[in-house]
Amino acid sequence: MPISDWPASERPREKLLLRGSSALSDAELLSIFLRTGVKGKSAVDLSRELLSNFGSLRNLLCADQTGFCDHHGLGPAKFAQLQAVLEMAKRHLFEDLQRGDALENPESTKHYLSSQLRAYKHEVFAALFLDNRHRVIQFEELFSGTIDGASVYPREVVKKAMSYNAAAVIFAHNHPSGVAEPSQADRQITNRLKDALNLVDVRVLDHIIVGDELTSFAEKGFL
Image 1 (cartoon, one colour):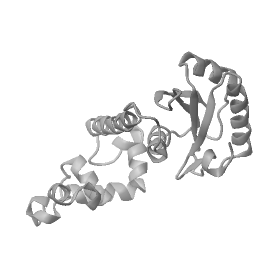
Image 2: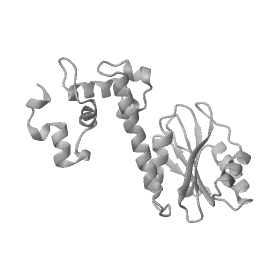
Image 3: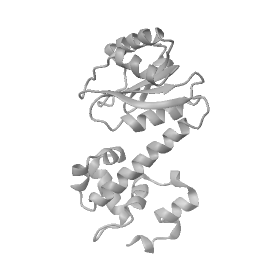
Image 4: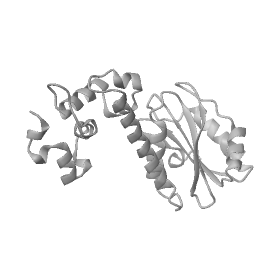
């Protein structure tokens, strides 16, 4: 049965307008993005099939172009649309951090860092540079590595902090495995960075590991 023949309260678009986006399932949200199904399948049916094939909504959103377009009902145009949506979401989260207020909402910070780093299949080490009122100056990806590690150079981090005239920094890196538990190497490099930045009066406020969950060094008492 086509979606247009469903009761109005069950159609994804009407349901969203009536009850809000949080009331929709992953398949219903995806169906609004897809807009149309394929022969013999409604947009919701196709969405359920795609989520089953990819294993999760996150896997679908993180798929590369080849993996995405290999599935029936998807193609380069849909992939481009999806990348545009994801980039708008990232920029929206960053604007929330850049509104001129001091960075006082740890959850917003975590959401932004997760949106930037979680999809990578290799380790990426990044930093949020802050002024003396803890307002965001810049986010930058500093080092890239392999699936299980990235080389981090304190001297380069100090130079970057000085170039932004930063007074504080929040580090973040992803664990492609999804396990957000800090390794001994993570703790050691954080201490080295903290010591190096102390010499130029730049505070390390936190180091957040991005995986299936998020781990904060500050919350763990590691700083």
